[in-house]
Image 1 (tube, rainbow, N blue to C red):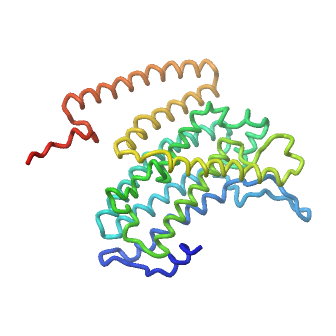
Image 2 (tube, rainbow, N blue to C red):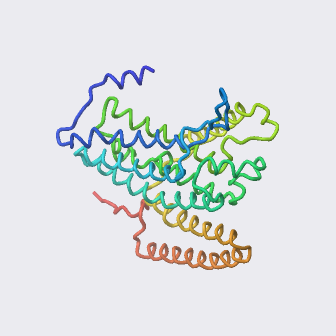
Image 3 (cartoon, rainbow, N blue to C red):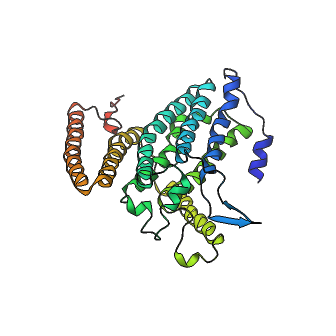
Length: 330
C-alpha cells in the first residue's frame, strides 16, 4: 500500500526530447489490453438468481480466443512506443528487443491456439471449457493434444510477457532499466501493473485452454456454482506460483539463445504438431504419414542447424562466446 500511494504522488517526469502525446499514451496501451483480455475467461459455471440464469463470465464473444491474440498484439505497441517516445537510446534498445521478442513468440503462441480451436471446433472460450468437461483430467486438452502444445504455450506466453528468464527488455545489467527507464510516478507503476495483470490473465487463459477451466471432479458438482470458482482459482494460483518459482530459479537467457529457442525450436515444433493434430482428425493413416514426413523433415532441419554451428566454430564467429572477445595486452 505504501509503495502504491508513493508512486501516485511522485513527480511525473517528462524528458525534454520525448514525444509528449505518445509518451503519456504508451502506459495505457499496455494496461488496457491486459485488463480486456481477462473478460473472455470463464470463471465459473451457470448461476440462477431470481429466475435469471447467467454464466460467471464477463463476455463470451463469437471470436472468443481471437480477442486474446488481438490484445497480446496491441500490448506490443505500448512497450515499443514507450521506448521510442522517450528520446533516449537505452529505452529505444529495450523497446526494439521487446518488439522482436514478442513478435517471435507470438507465432508459436498462435499455432497452439490453432490446435485448441481445431480440436474444439469453436473460437468461444465457453465452448472450449465445455468440450473438456466430459471426464475430469482425461478430457482436458492437456491430455488430448499430447502435452507438447501445453509446454509450447507455457514457454511462449512467458516470453510474450517478458517474464524471467525472458526479461531481456528490462535487462538492468546492459540497459539500465529497459523501455521504462525514463518513466516515473504512476506511469511507471502502470507498466508493472500491466505486467503482473498479464501474468494473472495468461495463467487463467492457460487454465481455460488446457486444464478444463472451472471444471472439477464429479463429486464436487453438488454445489454447482461454488466449486467451479474454487477449482478455477486453485488452478490459476498454481501457475502464479510457477511464475514466481521460475523467477527465482532460472537465470536470464542471452538474446541469441532467446531467438534460437523461438525460431529454431518452438516455431518448427508447433507447426509440426499442428499438422499432426489436423492429420489425426482427418484419419489415423493420415496422422501416421504426416508423422513420418515430419520425422524426415525434422532430421534434415537438425542436420542443417548442426552444419551451421560447425561452420561458425570453424570460422570463430560464434555469437555470445567469451573467447570471441579479442585479448588486450598492455
